[in-house]
Length: 114
Length: 114
Image (cartoon, rainbow over all chains, first blue to last red; front, side):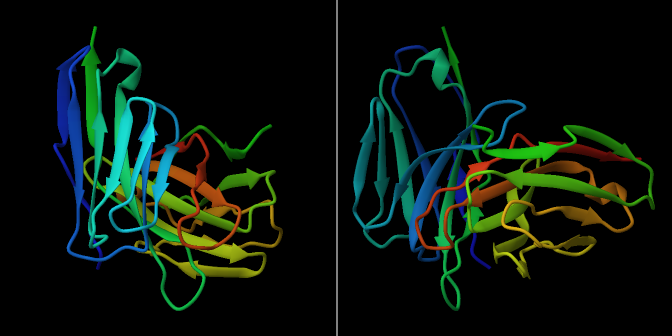
């Protein structure tokens, strides 16, 4: 069974601080996605990375896929209250053909205080 | 632009009752899936479909049935509700069943079984 562990589970910071969220597994994934979820809503896709070592930037968010495609990180620079939410990583697992099953991590709950 | 629509938003069932959670998407997406989200356990895959007439089991399929008679609809049926099925259920879709393709999620159904 493929598992994705996220750390930390909870993070409370002040506006303007930087932070990094980690997503780790002992399994290799074909792709890695990050989602943000707000209370009462479904997760919303932030980014997809598919190549080992790949780095993508989305404004103040920087995503990296590990060289061995077993881990990923999300770095937020100068966090703002609007960044508050549950951050989920999800690994793409293809088995026996063109499937797109995602294995989700347990999530990191981020609270940015003004 | 509706995206993925889930109904109902909230539901309370008695143990042993059956019900169907509805999911519809208007994006002509090929791939659809159902997840349940429980505290501390992230999102777990229940069933998925790679196209009309094709379904398969995910990680936690027991107690649930699905069918995919049209591209747009993917209902999830609870056969005989149990308290362990109390959870938030999310339907998700993607435009094809391939690696690295991001999901669009519905806003969820919060189910309580008493």
